[in-house]
Length: 233
Image (cartoon, helix red, strand yellow):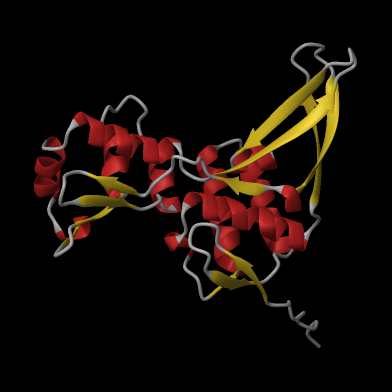
C-alpha cells in the first residue's frame, strides 16, 4: 500500500513590482533541501539557481522567469515565513568589540524599499520618452556569472532592461530591433540620459532591513541586511 499524498494549501501573495496577486503553495522538505544545498555551496550562481528552482516549484500558474529579481527575493522570504518560521535567528560579529551578537529577524517586518527619486520613465527629448523594466532573474544570473573584467557587462544589462521608446503617436519596442540598430540609437543619446538610466538601477527597489542592537560597551548600533544573500547567510 502506498503512503498517502499530503494536500498542500494554495495561498495568495502580492508581487511588489506590479501589485499582481499570484498563487503559491508552501515549500516542503524537498524545497528546504534544495535551499540548503545552494546556501552551503557558497556560490552566488548556485544560490540563485536553487532559489529559482524552489520558487518555480511553489508558484501556481506563474513563470518564475518573468519575475524581477527583487520579486524573487521577496517571494523566497515570504515562502520561508509561511512554510517554516517567520523568525530567523542568526549571529553577527560586532566590528568594535569583535564579539558575537545574537539577533532575531521577523521576516514579516521586511519591506521592499524604493528610493524616492526612482523612475522607470526617462525623457530623452521633447517628443520621446524611454521606458525601462526591471531585470529578470535570468538577466541577473547572467550578470553574476559574467566576466567582471569585461567592460561591456554593465552596458549589456542596461540595454536588456530598456523596454520601449514612446511618443504621443508611436511606440518602438527594443525587442523588435537588431543589435546594430540599438547600438546606433544608444550612441545618439546624451550623457545625461545614460546617467538617468544608470540611476534607474542604483535606485531600484530592494529588500532592506535595519536592526538595532547595543554592544557590550553600551553603544547602540545598526546592522543593515540587504538582498537575498544577506537574509539567508
